[in-house]
Figure 1 (cartoon, rainbow, N blue to C red):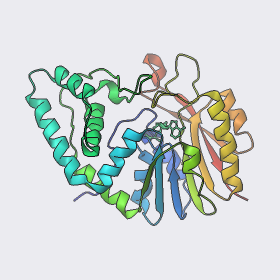
Figure 2 (figure 1 turned 90 degrees about the horizontal axis):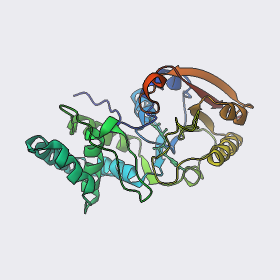
Figure 3 (figure 1 turned 90 degrees about the vertical axis):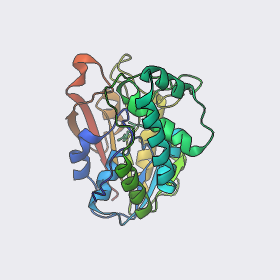
Length: 281
Ligand SMILES: C[S@@+](CC[C@H](N)C(=O)[O-])C[C@H]1O[C@@H](n2cnc3c(N)ncnc32)[C@H](O)[C@@H]1O
């Protein structure tokens, strides 16, 4: 059986297309792996394909998303059952669009149902986006896919094993508190909501509140503190005058990637990003 795991949700800013460059800068050895802007977690899975001899500390401010990780780790079979029911009902529905909007309005009563709903909506909504309104309600429209794969039982089981093998601690929290305990010989991957290149290209609605320019500045200060504390830090962000300035003391590598969610139309190709490397002395 193939036990490779991969993201169970499509996530804005997902890092699948940048993996070769990110893996190139992954330290050979570290005790703890911290990813406090987890999203779909593409780098985490790719790291685990190399080895799982570290403890993982995975977190995101999005509590629904973190709940789904917790359920996958602790109750994969219950989640598979719940997703299998949803998939069956979806394909039997007279109107898949109506079924989608019913599930979008549904308030689940258990954490397993909540995880199944998040995955179901992600697989059937427009572009696999996660976006909420100011009240924190998911508001992406129906995606009109012909045959979305709602349940991938093999991947759910593989992720569950990966999370257990790395003794993953899963937290829904702001990145700062998630990083309070890391130190020497730990690896931190920071993939914040990107600094928008222009007002219209902004996509930072993963949770109500967004990620402002002040947040970007504070993150750069946190980056410096982490390196001073002895952590090896890798950060990805959009390549803008502000991000270049904020990280000018560190090694920066410019990369070009295709980014299907963040941008529209002709802006889809050749998006410029930077990787910043923080290596302790
Ligand atoms: C660019 S995405 C990460 C994408 C991820 N690397 C992937 O491969 O899918 C940024 C993530 O940061 C989270 N986030 C936003 N503000 C945050 C904060 N203050 N603290 C922690 N997480 C935050 C969002 O919920 C979102 O999942």
